[in-house]
Structure formats: C-alpha cells, structure tokens
Length: 206
Image 1: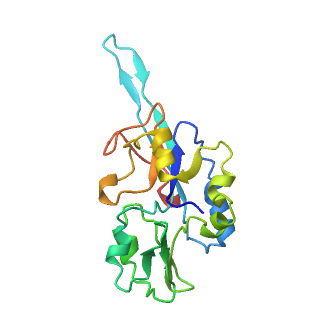
Image 2: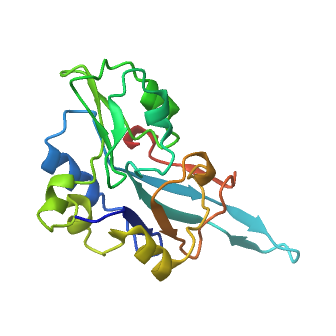
C-alpha cells in the first residue's frame, strides 16, 4: 500500500478510448449514470486566413481522464456536514456510507465533480483509489486497463521527481483550490488553464 498515492496522466498519449472509465465501472459495479472516472474531449480551432489570403487551420483536440484526485485540501471533506467524507492515513478520500445523507454538498463543491450520487442507495459515492487492490499490491483498475499506459499512479514524491510540476491545462480547474494529487504531462496541442479557445465536446459523458 502506497503511503501517499497520486495519479499521472500523459495527455500526449491518451487516445480517449475510455477503457479506464469502463474498467472503473466494471470493477466497482457502478449504477447507471454513476461515473467515478470520466474522459473529457477538449477541442477547438478552425480555419484561419493568412496575410496572403490563403487558408490554414489550427484545429486541435485532446483527451483528459479525471477521477477523484484525493486532494491535499479536499473541499468535499470541508463541506460535508456529517463527516462522512474523510481522508484516511494515506490521504485517500473516502465516503462513510453509514454517515452520508446524500445532500450533494460534496459534489457541488468539488471542482472536478468527483463525488457521484447513487440514487438507489441514497448516498454519495466516489473513486476510492482502488484501496482494496492497492492493499493486495495491485494497481487501480483504471491504471491496469489503460492500453497506452497514459494513466499511471505511484508515490506522490516519486511522480513529482519523475514528471516535475503538473501542467496547468484547460479544461482543468486551478489546482490551488484543492491541491490535487494529480500530475499532468501536456501534449503538443494542450491549451493553458483558463483558455477559451476550446470546449468540452462530450458534455453528456462527463
């Protein structure tokens, strides 16, 4: 079991296949509409007229796979009125279903919309970093399923040493809000955080 686990996503190699998303739903037997991991397609651009009146294009698209980032300062924990949302000794953010009243405060506060409501159970649910797999020495289901190895995980300090500071790219929120345990390696066409040059093209999936 890692002492301080974190995720890493390489935007340059992610193909948007959503295998990570499917593996998560399958492993956790998630109800319809509940998605602990989601893959966003961020795209934009169009035709551009050059000074010589010829046309070129600046079309771009990339994918980013996001689940709960088990943040250093999880706002979901701070807004939970019953302490159902809490951090364990490794910093993994978990939900105590016996305390949860399904108020949605955590979902509304989280800039990543990580907590998801299970209507059948009447409680909030979320990625638990496959803590059961980690205790068995296995990687999280999403990581194990990624065919391009774009999604990885490891000790926070080891990932920071390997990849450096996380890139600030659109459409991710400002990491200063919650200090996520997430490292992002940008692709060639990645746009800076806050950029309005693109939009999420699959909103029904995220």
